[in-house]
Image 1 (cartoon, rainbow, N blue to C red):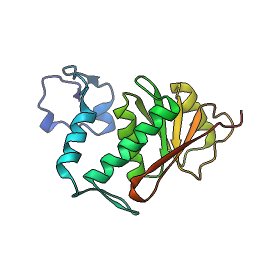
Image 2: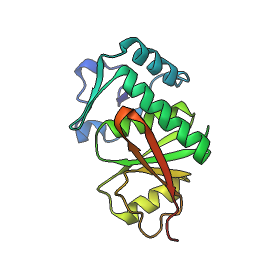
Image 3: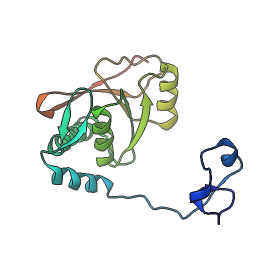
Image 4: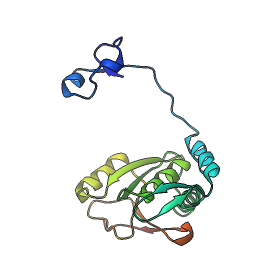
Length: 173
């Protein structure tokens, strides 16, 4: 809880004003990460089955369809591109279902998701990828890696039946 007075009632604090946050101290108990979050999400998706769980401008995914897409993406990332625990993988995509599929697949492998804005300048993207030590960036088919992108660019396309194809493109260095 970001407060100047650790014993103050958080319900009456204005936590989101600049003056309230200036000089604030982050206090509170250390929260342990949920190590089995991917399995908890999988349980929910299995429970939902054919019910819709994710909607964007292009499609509606049921629990089963989302789980299939996540499994296919994770399989491709791990077997074809050797992504595993501790690796950092960036996801560059417009907001939509593909972003969540990528995030869940990366988490499923024990890797770390690195958000990258599709509208960012290439120089910023290159800096973030290098700074975090990204092993790869998961990007749409139409994205072209610019100068300074030195990690593997994985082009992902989900097609009918939620079959995921992930191909590797090495950028020009």
